[in-house]
Structure formats: structure tokens, C-alpha cells
Image (tube, rainbow, N blue to C red; front, side, top):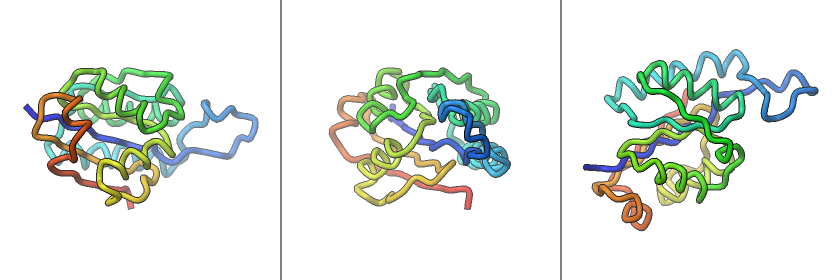
Length: 157
């Protein structure tokens, strides 16, 4: 078995309503276009996660739902992923115990974790970026201590 971790930064959000709390910001038109496109790109690669976990923020939840719909996987929401730092993102993915996990969350945690796992090969996770990491291991603790065997990175632009 291998461990596969997919990091997806939420799609582009709408800053138009200053009265909205950050947690409640929806996706803008570009975000609504990008999320299903990037989900399709991931599906076309043959990847199907066992689990999708996402921040409870509206923009992350909506992004995750687009991926869930395309990949045929239910989305689990976790309020601790909202604004989570890299170690929390990793811990939450590992805690699922699944072999293939897709996490939808926010920066700066997403960029920090992607940079760490790619040995700084990924300098920035723009909105709706998808980073896929794979280890030839079946134990999250072991995977967390070594570099991934491979990784890919894709963005909507």
C-alpha cells in the first residue's frame, strides 16, 4: 500500500461584501469555475481519495464539494482545518488512517506544508492549486519522517 496526500487550497473567494465574516466568504465566479475544472484534472489523473476532509469555511467547503462530486467521495468537515498551520493539516490527514486523503484548507498552512513536502519545490499554493504527494509506505508516521517518493503540482492557470 502507498500513502497519498492531496492538498487543495480553496478556490478564489469573493471579497465583495465587507460585512461578511471571513469564515462566511463564498467563492467568486472564477472560484466557481476553477474548482470543478481542477477536480476533473485530478479525476482524469486516475486519483480517487478514500477520504476528503475540509475546513468549515464556506469557500473551502464549496471547493471540497466540487471535488467530492467529481470524485464520488463524501466530504467531512473539520473546524480545526480553518486557518490551520501545516502540522495540524498533516495530523488531521494522518488521523483519518486512510491510504489516500484529500485536504481542502487555507494558506499559509497549505503553502507551508506543500513547501516542506516538496523540499521547497512548491513555493506557493495559489487558490485552487492541487499538490499530490505519494509515499511507498503504508504508515503515516513513517511517511511523515521521510520525503515523498513523488509529487505533482497543478494550478488552474
